[in-house]
Amino acid sequence: MQIASRIEAMKESATLAVGAKVGALRAAGVDVVGFAMGEPDFDTPTNIKRAAIVALESGMTKYAPTAGDKAAREAIAEKFRRENGIACKAEHVTVTVGAKHAIYMALQAMIEPGRGDEFLLPTPAWVSYRPLIELAGGVCIEIPGSIDHAFAVTAAQVRAAITPRTVGILLNSPSNPCGVVVAPSELKAIVDVVAEHPRVAILSDEIYEKLVFPEISPDAVHWSPGSDPRVAMRTVTVNGLSKAFAMTGWRIGYLCAPGGTFAREIIKLQGQMTNSIASFFLPAIVEALSPSSASQVETMRAAFASRARLIHAGLLEIPGMQCVQPTGAFYAFPDISALIGSRTMKGAIIRSAQSFADALLDEAHVAVVPGEDFGDCAKTHIRLSFACSEAQITKGLDRIKRFVNSLAGAPSTAKVGSVS
Ligand code: PMP
Ligand code: GLU
Image (tube, rainbow, N blue to C red; front, side, top):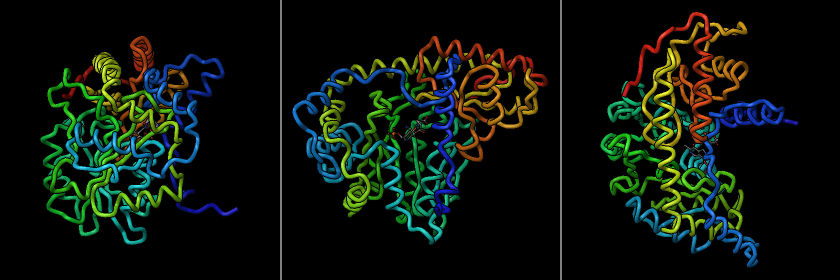
């Protein structure tokens, strides 16, 4: 059977691939410390579960309207207005099968294939963005961030990257994999540049919005580009319940697109793809976004902030690792270039982040995601998700430290330290 080249050429998700390896090793009885998956270890708050159970038991088992029912779309629109300052109505909102699906559809709708449409991607960036841009027929133009500037790309870099073929820019703050919040002033400077280019749309992935740590950095404050009236009509804002509400398995995302007919076109696409999400999950969205969930979200956020400090301090004690202090999401993204060229106890040569991650899993039973698929500038980094308990973090760091100390030809002291 023929396989379309655009599918065959597409890379598999590196995050899911490592996650699957961890699952297989654990099933075989291996005690793996998993820093791979960006998936909170908490359970979904009980009030949110109850809302779905009650809906299911009351017979909410039929097809729902494609974009979600009125109550859920209104709750989401109200959230966007109240928390994000985005002027939108329920009719601009679509509930999607996870934020991933929202991003897929937005890119399908924004990019004209075969025309060389360019989509700008500040990197390091989440592994799925490039494949989804390319699947839509776009050309992905990376704008590299630097570890010395906590990975934030500058407005000048964005300006220099825009060409007559640029149709959009993908922004993601707080960032996966960098674990940093881009300061509102820096994000606003980028939006200033985009505002000068009416053809350039913004796709803003704000899935980690609620996981910001102002107790670590006062700049760790979330700001939504879609709230700027100059670009509001050409900004699509994506969010979802997976991360802040510990609901990864529910597959609930949403987007809002107040400009023109974009929202209608997205609903048309979704109507041909998946139709609505499971109807009895819709009341759970209303419940999640209501004030009754806020304190549980805050408890989880505070736990992530404490873990952010713990993992950063631990990584700084490991020779050869350079790491920015995480200020949002739940990722640390150290540079391991000083370890390249070293040799493991079993004789493996560390030639890349991939070979480091492979050897670490094989020899020390710690899973991390290698940096290669997060962008060209991320090739010597590894990503550690700290969406796991402090006990696991301490155990995993201890294993990594012993592994690195056992490498032949690696630096013998913690030489670099924090860069921010
Ligand atoms: N965006 C980012 C930056 C992510 O890390 C993820 C990972 N889950 C998603 C979107 C997709 O989330 P989901 O599909 O679970 O809503
Ligand atoms: N987004 C999470 C991660 O980066 C979950 C896996 C995925 O969908 O990529 O680990």
